[in-house]
Image (tube, rainbow, N blue to C red; front, side):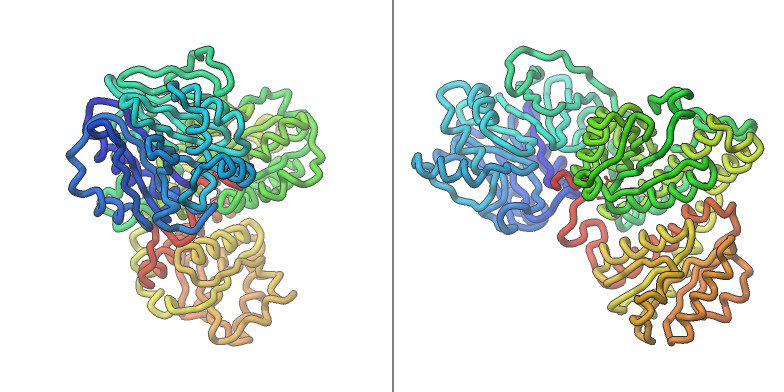
Length: 612
Ligand code: F6R
């Protein structure tokens, strides 16, 4: 949802900005731009479309300037994805430039007022208002002018501001959009997300809402936007490294991240469960055992793929802990009439920890007295700082826009949490926890072993299906959410229309869609609802539906239903969602790649949705 970067220091600025933007391009790729100081002037370059277009434009200037600059990669909200609407935006004089991630909600009235005062606008964006507003307040103190302008602004922002007359000064601020500062020996950085900083520093400071940073060569100050008194902010050392955010020989980040899943799941589980005793430890969850025993309900809140993880967890928690669980899409949760209190635990599930709707959801839950836990992948992200407790998924940076390893790591964390609740509330004995804990760890080895074979089989299989216009995914029970997730993966990266259904629900309407043109992917492990699922698949076959099945090795019945069956080893029934996700991801990936789609940067999408 737009990425911003900034640098103040002694090094060549353009390569640093471009590298930062490359690492943030997953946040938006409608246009890109950068600006830097050179010989008393600001040099600005912008290009429509992906970063590669900007790189072509700035090519000959790469080695020119050292010093200070800011850059932006855009996911369009206000104004079409054109060059004119690309950031950085300037004031009337062209001496002041702004990059922005967020939405200035009162931009329309501000624009009218500024136009009446003689300001001339050259874009349709909300951001440009900010440049003119700062200009309006600017005499000789850039920091004061930024403070005054932000006082008039409603909405969300992470901003970086430069002024032609202050070549060694970068002013940054945030409110409801992520912004992290990097601290190097002689240099300071800003970025919307940590991967942009990793080649240069792992020492970071997470800015909080309504904070303003003044960056100069090798030094910085932080205060509140509305109060100049300096704040003492903690510096955090990040344990990710730059290589983790590279493709490492894979064709796409998504494929690399699919193959990283065994390790990501293992990292999420390791140290939190003792396989020999079945003892689960989650010290960072911010709830003591008495709190946990008193819980009456759990409310899971998330968006997109993370919401699918929540749907799976409902099956686990209700079955093993016997606690009622409700699952909400965050954009609905935040505006619905909520019945929460201190005995309802709200759990926000989020890869990024910055998703605007999920964040708003936990803020509402907190305001109603509920305890809030977040299951999150990004250390120091806003959700992790605002929640009462955290379970980090240790998936490492996820760069592909379509979430893969973050999802299975969320499932692993949610399964651990189920075991933990079962332990504390006495609903799962140690033998059961041992069995499931060991099963979860063993599953990593199973996935690792199966991945290459699955990829090979799926590559061959998709030749029959990659031209399909529509696809259905069906599953039952704990695998129903995996049908939803499979359909989401396929539609977002291949642009094939796909829907996920509970297999038993088809006959209530969607079965009307079935004909010999409609591939249906069935998730059909030998589990407690196996016979029921098979009956539903028979109903599809009877109507000439083209079945692709994923089932348990040795299940000959499936071969009678379809010639396209992918077999998986038998694992503990409750862990099937983690295993059955893998072929669904690979199928989507291979189809999208075969169709020539841009797998890592699908159209219209961006990772980390920081607007509502
Ligand atoms: C789909 C996908 C999205 C995210 C959703 C929530 O592949 O990645 O649906 O799952 O935008 O994002 P987080 O988990 O960062 O809150």
